Image 1 (cartoon, rainbow, N blue to C red):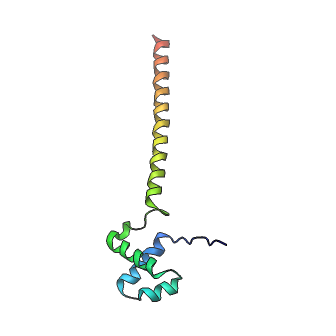
Image 2: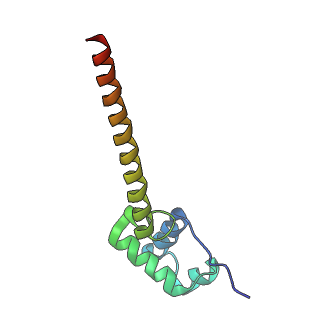
Image 3: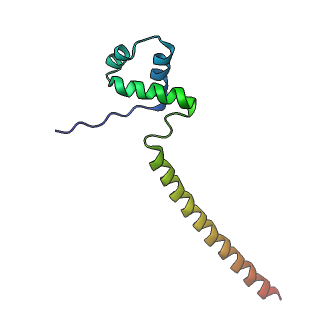
Length: 99
């Protein structure tokens, strides 16, 4: 039986990292309380210390999110270029009709 991987949102990670960095709780104790591995909590604290509020972007791997966004934007550009071409052709058609 496989276990489903737990996901934690950005606010949860930042709160946990701040708690560790402020010295309010030991990593081992807080990890046990939150039911996560202490190595995970240490990594979150390190990432938050290095990147601040920019840590933990998106809902998972930032690389995957960036790639998805790039693909989405390219499709939008293609759609807008097609619309632009259609409007140019329509404008040329109207100009011929009135000439």
